[in-house]
Amino acid sequence: MSFLALAGLEKTYRDGTRAVRGIDLSVDGGELIVLLGPSGCGKTTTLRMVAGLELATGGSIRLNGKDVTTMRPSQRDVGMVFQFYALYPHLTVRENIAFPLRAAGWSRSEIGGRVDDVAARMGLGKLLSSFPRQLSGGDQQKVSLARAIVRRPAIHLMDEPLGTLDADQRLAMRELIRAEQLASKVTTIYVTHDQEEAMSLADRIVVMEGGRIRQVGTPSDVYDRPNDLFVASFVGSPGMNLIPGRVTEDSGRPAFVSKEGHLHIDVPRPARPGPATLGIRCEHVHEASDGPVFGRVLTEEYLGSASHVHVQTDAGRVIMRGSSGAARRRDTELRLRLDPAQISMFDAVTEKRL
Image (tube, rainbow, N blue to C red):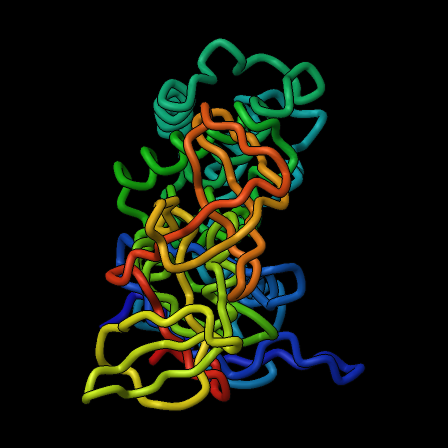
């Protein structure tokens, strides 16, 4: 049985806005699940319903074998970490971390030992007597995280906890969160719109859009085998190159032909004949002197270890990942080859993966 089960979960506000539209999700004990999607997709609302901060208007939530759909937050045994630290400014770091244990009636000796243990693991040992105003943003977020995990709740719920931090602080905190979650084995639901964060943290990613779940899968599943055109274009930086056309069958073998007929490439089965969209990641587009796709360079984005080359081809605009040392001028002519083993095909009408 799933540790957390959402069944037909819905949230409709009084003004008629449907923030979450009947989603189903099963989470195993000890998993770290990331809810990923653009702003307004329903990921934070879903998290808040699991926490009890928002009441569901439809469906059910079962946590650790109990129906908690209508329970108060205090009855659900959840630990929340928010984007903004929400620390008590008049309490020291030690007192902030200890607050949930004091509220739960732990003894002073139990609290002291547990706080010291968590603070040491999170690099806060020397800051226990400090007040929040004396800390950096990264250290304040560490305290917020320590306060959430100190009592080992049934589930951790994290809502964009690293959104206000600098890049180097986010990386360090990401590593700390994953290490702590693996050590504690506490089931964790993590909300973010940052794809790199999602890919590096998640056991499974839940891609949401418009209040619905578009795909649930491992990071490699979601990246390499997107369920539909939305996931293909949203996941990845940049998203998949998408080329409209149709699938034909010649001598029993399916092939993709672009709209203007300039690209003709065999595709792996299954692929039904009809209007279709070809998807391929930029790292699977290669410059080749005998490549079948002709194009001209529009611009090149230098990324340090690599570059993204934007190319206008006869089949449409394509982004290719290139080596960082090979600068290409605008209007440079080149030919491209697409790796046929890495092609995804989508039905042009349903937008679903073929």
